[in-house]
Each structure stands twice: as structure tokens, then as C-alpha cells.
Image (cartoon, rainbow, N blue to C red; front, side, top):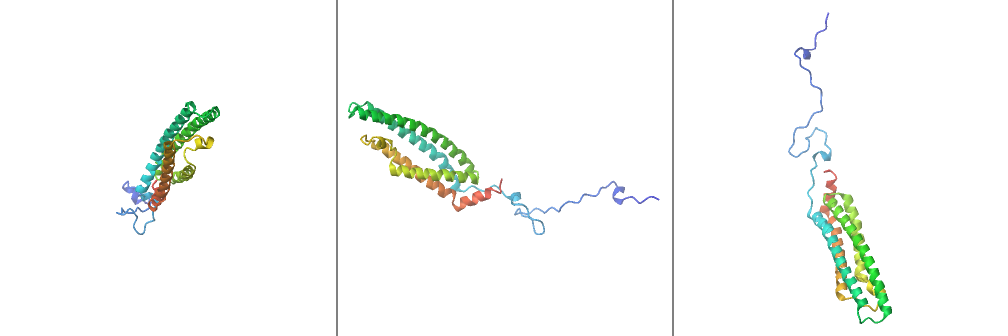
Length: 217
């Protein structure tokens, strides 16, 4: 006696494997009631970048480049002034020429070191600026530290004067007003730009952008 065949197999039909119910499409992207909720990343779209973050990005790119150029120009003017002071026929004494000559050598060494340092920092600002623009919160934290240090340095420059090397090493050598004014402008630009950058990246719209960017990746 044979057992009856499976009615599903008589016609060559195989029963479908059971699967989890799939929610019907919904205009809002959310599953209707009765279906388990999806993970936020399943329906999150790339957040729209606010104007504040876009402005902060351009500050992070343009201002370091501009300040580096201003510093290089001002340092070259200072170096030229010191070299001319040493060789001028109206120099007061040999001792004064020796002091100014030493000061010119130190100024040139400091100039080379600071220019290389500012080029490296400018490259970091631009690199992290693009990450900031893409919504990376860690880049915002790193640039916040950079901006705070730069703002403190700019405040010191406004208090002591830029460049202050001439007056510090030889009080009897008068720095031209154009060099001092350009140095103050450099410090003022850095301070204003860094304060504006810090405000822009922590506005409510910026906070929402960085928060939403976590779910869009």
C-alpha cells in the first residue's frame, strides 16, 4: 500500500518558502502601522548643507591662504628694512650695526620657520575644511581647536604688535609704520575670521546638519 502523493507535487508545483511580510510602499517613506519600524539609515537622505557651514568652509580655505601671503609679504618688507638699516651710511655706530645685523639674521630664520609652519597649517585647514563641508563632526572639533589657538595668537599680536622683533631686540631702531600697520591688519583679520568661524559652525542649523550627517553615511 502506497501513501498518497503530496498534492503539491502532482502538478510539479513547489510551495513557496515563507518569508517575512513586506510593507507596501508608502509615500512618506515610513512603513504603515503593523509593520516593524526600519532603521533610520534605511530612509535617511543626505542632509542639505546650510549656508553657515558653507561660509565656514570658505573661511577655512581662504583666510589661512590670505594670512600666509600677508605674513610672507610683511616679513620680506621687514627683512629688506633691516638689511637697508645695516648698510645705510647714517648708522649711528658699529655696535648698532652689529645688533641690527644679528636681528636681521634672526628675523630671516624666524621667517623661514613660520612660513613653512603656516604652509603646513594652511594645508591642514583646507583638508579638514572639506571634511567639515561634508558633515564630519570630528573635522569640526579639530578646526575648533585650531581656531581657538589662532584667535588667542591674534589677540597676542594685537597687544604686542606685529612684527615686534625689531622693537624687542633694538629699541633704538624704529620700525616703519607700514610694516606695523600690516602686522596689525594680519592679526585683526585672523581674530575676526576665527570668531566668525566658531560662531558659524555652532549655529543651530549647523548642529542639525552635523547630527543628520551621521545617519546619511
